[in-house]
Length: 251
Image (cartoon, rainbow, N blue to C red; front, side, top):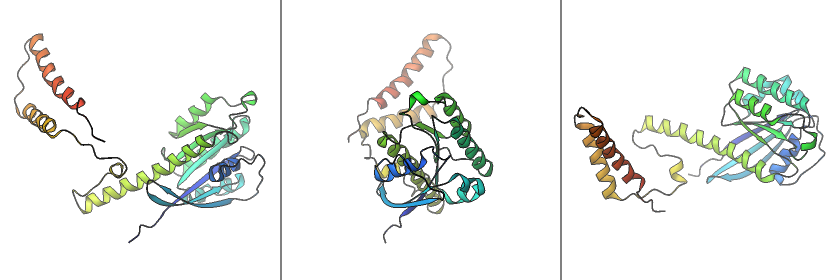
C-alpha cells in the first residue's frame, strides 16, 4: 500500500508592501516579482518530495485584513507560519509583532515551525529596523529568525522554508514512533536512521567498553583517600572514553 502524501500548509503573514508575496513567488518559482498587489488571500499548491516523503504543499499568501479578522482561522489552518516585515519599514515590523502576539495569545507558537523574516536586506541604506531588535523579538517568542532579500537570496529563502517543512516531518515521525512504541514495545525506529547510514563500530571495542562500564557500575567504589588515588581513578575512566572516541565509523 502506497503511503499517503503529507499535507503541509504554509501561511505567510505580514503588512502590505513587506514583500511577503515576493517571497512566496520566489520560493515557488525562483522568479522575483518586484510589484505584486492583492486584496485577498491567495493559495498556491505544489507537490514536492522531502526526505523521501511525498508532500502536498499549500502556500497561503495572506492579506493583513484577513488575519486581523480571524487569527483563530489562520492558526487552525496553518502547519507552518512565516511572519514577514521589511527592514526598511518600521511600521511593518510593528505589524509583525502584532501578528505574533495575536497568534501566540490563541496558541503558543511552535519554535520549530514558526519563522520571523526580515525582508529587503539588499536595501541596507534604507534600514529602519535594527537586526538586534528583530532577533530579540524572535527570542521572546522562542521562534526562528532570518534576514534575507526576496530579490537576491533564493537559496536562503528556499533553505529556511524547507527546514521548517523538514521539522514538521520530524515531529510527525517522532509522534508516530511514540505511538508505535506504546502499541509494539521495542519496534520503534528513529526517523534519522532512515536518512543516515548505520554506524559500524568495531565489535571488540564495543564489547570491551560494555564490560568496563558494567564493572564500574557493579563494583563498590573505593574510598579516595588522597590525590594520587583520585588521579588514578580519573585516568581509568578517561581511558574508557578515549577508546570510544577513537572508534572509526564505516560509511
